[in-house]
Length: 368
Image (tube, rainbow, N blue to C red; front, side, top):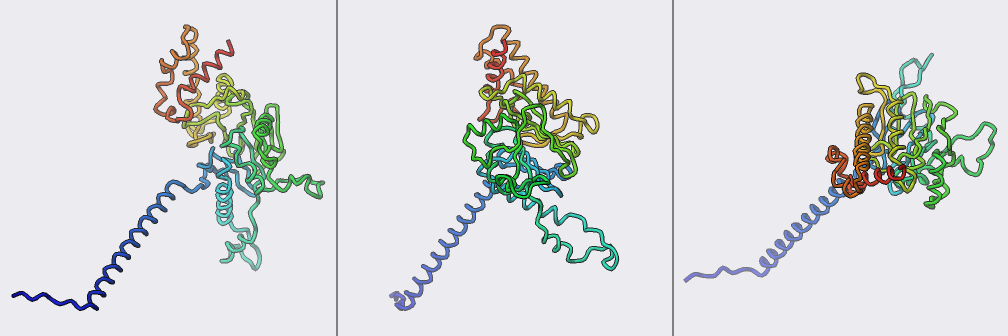
């Protein structure tokens, strides 16, 4: 006869407690893993916005809307475009990080006499006592939201220069960065109800707007590219660095986004691209030399710009030829005049090859 083992009530209660404790620990560990994985996935979805070097004191901030060109140096910060409004705080944080990095990397000041010519161990600490120079200027290449959306917040985070005879701030304008643009950009942003602090403070309506003095050791000028993507496009040329911020005129991630309703045209765009090719000087055999910072994507040189110009010209010519043969817009779209470049530039769902073809077609129809 088999005897059943007796289980003490106290032992049974202890065993039940241990089991429930293990289950609780297991659930807690699983929850921690899930939360950690979720946090990591959020981090992967929200990449850090930072400034990457281009040449000398010129940097590029990507991922904040359009590309933002940054000139950072002893005179302060000059920005080309400001990204979207939603990313303005991240852009300001990226600029502050960049300035701190540059401040720490600056060579030690020369010493003499008892101080000798060798920097002390406290030199890095001394540098932190001097605040970096503020954001002085924002230049808008267009009025598009991903180029000018951050104007208000970023401008208010800066401080521009005032004249030599000014004893106080005129209308508070010195309490924020100056915003430069073509006059038509001011009109477009006004129509879009941009807050007053985000509107351009200095505009031009001719061919060019030059800063009256060197900024960070070089001349800076805005050049008008009329009736290209819109009727207010500018490029910004940093002459000493030989770097040009092109705005939407050059975008190696998609076809040119011509906006006919806002004054853009295929002929104006080609004139602008030809002008950029004329300005550029290669370092050697179409490589290096003048750098172009586009609206989106990587930095290019004259070889990239020539490729983009030639692509746009060929597509224009194909559409123009089909129009002369009496083809309708739908027939031209079916002929796929952009087919050779669709794999590279036709993947943006917000600006498809058909949209680009239609913009060229309508633009050429107006001309006829």
